[in-house]
Image 1 (cartoon, rainbow, N blue to C red):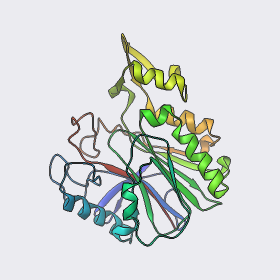
Image 2 (image 1 turned 90 degrees about the vertical axis):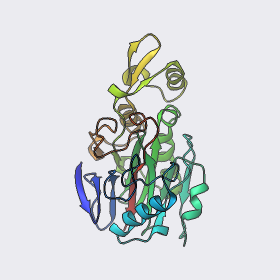
Image 3 (image 1 turned 90 degrees about the horizontal axis):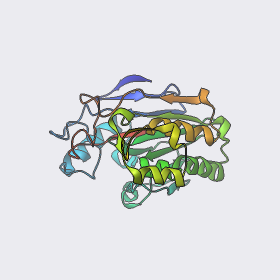
Length: 264
C-alpha cells in the first residue's frame, strides 16, 4: 500500500484503488486545519473539535477528488453490524450522519462513502464486475459479531457480487502489541465469529493482546474472498503519531481518519 498526495491531503492507496472505475484509500491526519490535539485533518464530528474545522477538513478532502462536501457519506457508527444499502441517487448525503450503522455498501457513482476510525480498522470492499463497493468499520465488537461477513453477504444480496471476485483493503488500525483486552472481549469472540486462539495472545491473567487485523483477514477469508485480492496496510495507528490518529495513545482526545471508496 503506497502513500499518495492528492491536493492538500495524503492517503494510503490499496493496490486496486486508483483507476477510472474506482478510487479508494485511507486518509492520514495531515493536510487539514484542526488544532491540537485534533491536528490536522480531523474528519470526525464525534469529537470535541470545532464543527467549522471538521467541515473545512471534509471540504478539503472532497475537493481533492473533485467532489463537493455533500458528496461525502458517513454515518453514526455504533459498533454494531447493521449495513446501510445505498442503491439510488441521493442529492444530499448529509442526513445519513444520523443513521446508526457500521457499514455502507453502494453501486452509486460519483460519491465518497467512508468510515471514520482512530484505532478500529477500516475495511474497503470492491466488486469490479458489478461496479459496487463497501466500507466497513471494524472494532472488537463488530469483529466478534462478524460484521465483515454480513457486509459481504449484503453485497451479494443487493448487487449480486460474487465473493470470489471481490477485492478488499484493510487500512491502518491498532496493532496487537498495543491492544490489550479482557475476558469480556474473549467471550464475545468465542460466542461470535471465533478464531480467538489465532488472534489473541495472553499477556497476564485475564489479559490478552488482540490482533484485530488478523481477525479481519480471517473473516474475509471465511467470507470467500481470495487472498490475491487483498491489500493490507502495515501501519499501526498507535505507533505512527505523526501520520495517524489513535484513540488509545491519546487518551480519547484525538481526531478521526477516513477509509473511503469512490466509484467512477
